[in-house]
Image (tube, rainbow, N blue to C red; front, side, top):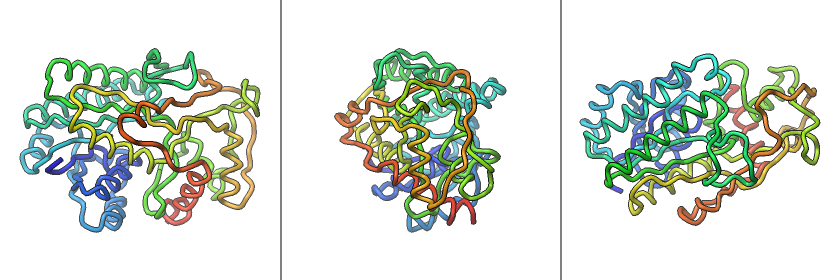
Length: 336
């Protein structure tokens, strides 16, 4: 694929790793980000990792004027759309913002892409579109029953993109439903940097190990799992970024909209993750058990076989690597 690749949300946790991965694959990335949930500090880190200055456009993905200027000024041949709001709890409190950004932003981007004649798009969706699974592992054919505002906005954006591809045969769209991204770049230069108290398990473990949070609350000790704690599919963020590159390459030969799960294909319990993190950081993680949270499920993991067959992609990094890389980031990146 000739030209440059626009990464919306490219300064965020997932987007920044995608930028590094596509640069390593030989593409020239351009970042479009409004920095509402990310920091400008990531830009020099990305420049160091990619071996050169990274073009950055500070703009909102809903800003059609900024998008048109971007496509006018740069020979963009494809887009990886990572921009969006992603906190499940926040979405329940701010539904208008979530629908506006996650759905409205996707529509605005697609409209300008169409005007510019750019029809290759990799869309960051989420396994939250499935809701509570009926069958494990969860395949792409599973019913879509999202139980949150966030999940419903992702489902709606997916449906819009499928409608777009049905109406115009030029579109080549990969919809990537990923499970639980975790870890950090092996260099320790970029990783997850949530503002306030983290909502995800691995960054919470980082903060507890660093002494910034007193203890980890584990929600539920009586789930029908081997050790009584919830089980999830944790996917290293670098494997996830590699999946975006594989999808981008595949788009050259696959018309229409293709939906793919990205996950490791097995689950780890909360206690298994805690013990792996203790091995990584060399200290005990203080924890306490709390009641189950409404909406949580006992066990949740992907069937990634379609991505393996279509993209030649498979998650390669295990739980110990996820934890070691996350702790390295906490010590050398997030904590600096």
